[in-house]
Amino acid sequence: MRKVFQVLGRVVLPIVILAGCSSGNHPVIPEVDSGIENMPVQTADGNTNTHLWGYYDVFIDIENLTVEAVENRKAMFTANVVNFINSMPAGLTFQIHGTKPGPGYIDVDIDVSIMHPFPGMTQFNGYDVRGVFMGDGFGTLNYNSKLKYPVDGIDQLMLPDPVDGIGGPDGYTRWFNKPEFSMGGMPLLQYTQGHLATPTFNGTATLNAYKYFADGLISNADLWGYLSANPGYNGKFSSGSKNTRNYYLRFPDSKGVKYGYAITANWEGPDIHPSNAPESVACKVNDSSTVWYVDSSQNGGKLILDISLWNWGNQPSKIFIESTVLSSVYELTSDEMVPFGGNEHYSTWHVEIPADNVTGLENQEYWVISQHDEYDYTNEFGVNNLAGTDKLAALFRCPLTVLGEPVSDLEVISPNGGEILWMAMSHEILWDTGSSGISNVKIEWSTDNFQSDVRTIVESTPNDGSYMWVPIPNVETDTARVRVSDVAGSGSDTSDGDFTIALPVWLKFQDEVEVSNSTVSFATWTPRPYEQWLDEFSTAISQDSDGMAH
Image 1 (spheres, one colour):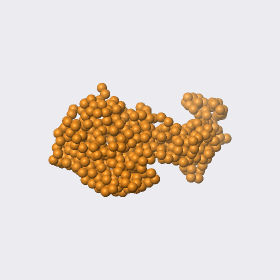
Image 2 (image 1 turned 60 degrees about the vertical axis):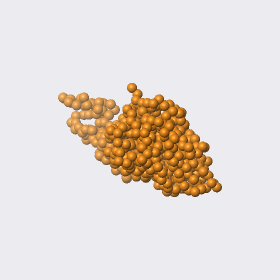
Image 3 (image 1 turned 135 degrees about the vertical axis):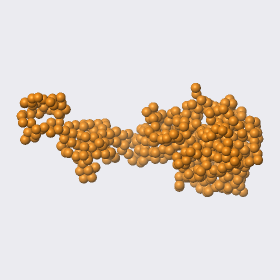
Image 4 (image 1 turned 180 degrees about the vertical axis):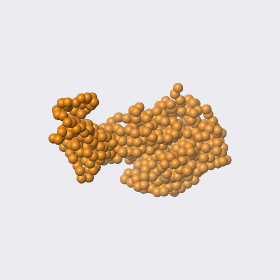
């Protein structure tokens, strides 16, 4: 039976930055402290529960360079499902590190710090806390047309700092976006805009970037490195602790500095720890892609990815890849869904996908989509939202480097190291033809890894992945390698290791030996103990003038 992801008041914290233009100047956001609404006390019998820590309206006065963060208590009490503890206010702090104007935009480098509202109450430790940056979404994913995501140059965007690479998203989530979670009903399960929010803010993105908050995770640290080094922490946000993460935000001039902000945290009950999210919370990709582009008629290559997903224990049911260089969404096959690495908290998968829609060098990317079929976006209270029964998914957005010249992805398959080839016999040379459109290849071999000894097998043969090497040269060596190269010179591949060329057999005959193309006849041979070997010998045997045959 399909599990329903029972959401009990996802920690939703809409923070709306008001534009407030003045004389065309870019806004500057100074550091400010503010109170945070107390975490409500509530339990439920769902598999994975989330709880509300507070709603916020944030007002930025551009002229006076001040920030005011105000708790929206009206929204909190409208929920009418929890008790509030007002004697232990938490803290929310912003610290601006700098602003950088660009052509048509302003970049803001800012730290966000959150203090857990209940010091000394370990029963309220939270897990997988995520601060979600919400804005507009001009882009649409083919994976699900309901998913609207921000586009650089058009929408408010979280991205890595172009200089040091810090401040980018840890992932993307669909939870509590304004378009889908504004159908009315229990405010704990809906997006709520505060009374100080700018009336013009109406974020359209249904897929929004987040940063992950946890004990010991410093503001600019890599999330994957932190989780790998501290798996025993279980992504915990401890009672009374303060954690900080860095955001690098870009605001187009046409939008102004305004956005929504939500915080989600997982918590199941005072005696149930840890209580982690069911979906993937982090992703690491080793990208060895060979995608290239010259013009509309000359392009190709492959996406070659080793994908690691941190899931704590819930491995994804399916993994999809969507990319600007693919004509359709790619779903990993059943064979590809067998991980080749990982541990109890994460797994790693390998996939190679021909790039069939390469349109240019710039602004190329791919999405890793981790789908969990046992969960969806419904809740036990029957509060409707437009995400509904869609499968729960975690999404990770990755930039893709496209090279400006053809890349050879030829790959020698055999002989690739360790084989024994027999003199005067034959061997089928096999290689992966790649996806770069190579028409013909040259095949060579060497006994010193092509340092000085380079011998041609064939000058040019069709790039069809197979060539019969016959006869194998009468050169005894255990350091042989072959090389397959594009005749046009765009690239090549060589055997990964050495293989051996050896003598198949030496026989000394006193009587006449007749050698033809297919048979070996012995004038006198009684008994004939090697008769069953004759077919194997037939294509390899030659005879020297002194009667020695091999």
